[in-house]
View 1 (spheres, rainbow, N blue to C red):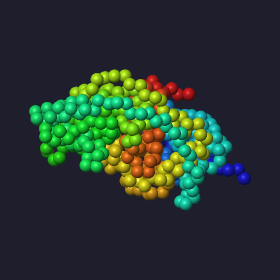
View 2 (cartoon, rainbow, N blue to C red):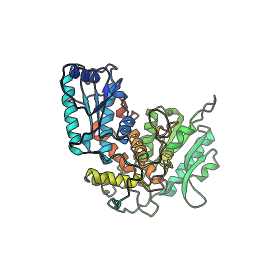
View 3 (tube, rainbow, N blue to C red):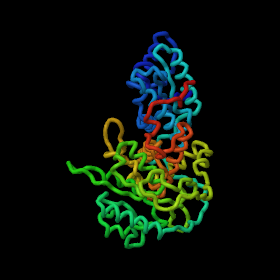
View 4 (spheres, rainbow, N blue to C red):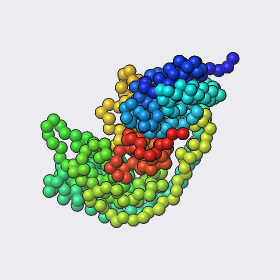
Length: 444
């Protein structure tokens, strides 16, 4: 008996759904495997809906919309053309066969085209066999865990910590004494000898601020909180100490209107890298080519070109694995997740008042602790950071289970740069997947 796949098709109400009707009226055969879901526009097909379809047992997902330039909502299909290929790349990286997810365009008069696309897609999924994406409760046992190739250890270079500390303190005192800012967010050494975020509200408290090889935290994550008005009280201007990667986060939040530029005094510090705690450079710093903040009001340190040794390309290594092995690798990682949300709390871009994956509504149920829910949380979070992640890797550093979630962000950052020529935070511009097409996409 031939295997019959279950195909979920999201069809645009105005064009592709009518195209399916046209095929039926003309008695053009289409596969019976298609379960059509009529949506107002292909731009309304969110990544969560696609992942939910696979989580619920679909063997393939087909999204069909109006041709570019013919959308009844002007640019709705532009969003689909930008967002869904990025989601496709992410799910493929997590182990889904690329043939199981397809985006295409069908007009109301193209019944024959609808039939051909539906038939070819169904045959491709049928050839793959049943999908192994959904994991039944208790139906998956962690195999011998795939090990990532070891990263090369690069020693920390000698740093001018004392000079930078003095300069940061002097500037913080100047800003606080003059009343230009109400708070300076920087770093201090705690009672246990660990470097941690610090908040100075007076010139005396500014003496606690330091700069050393352990200044890892991305302090930009505190800005939206400090600058959020309480009642009718207007927030005071805030100063923040940033590394080059952190400064890009400032630009991303500015582009998203989280605050305005005149509310923040950026104290940028040139950076030669941050320690991993054992005297070596953090992995993210080994491949970093930015050592001067892209935005700052006060610059501490001399701009210089610093070249570090390259790192093992873990993303490339994973992409070379067969889909099944990639899936097993990520399942073994996500299975350890305890849903503590430390990754989200450490990230300056995860600033939604209520996270989608903590809502229990008709759109998505993300409160479970099963392996499917944990995978969807991490993939969904990575997708929401596409074109926004600045690579500070604080999410991975904060993870108590040592899950290499930064690899998901790195994969999408590479896809965004390759497709749109965009690197998050180099300028005050939004992520390209939330804007309209400007020549990036060509049909066929």
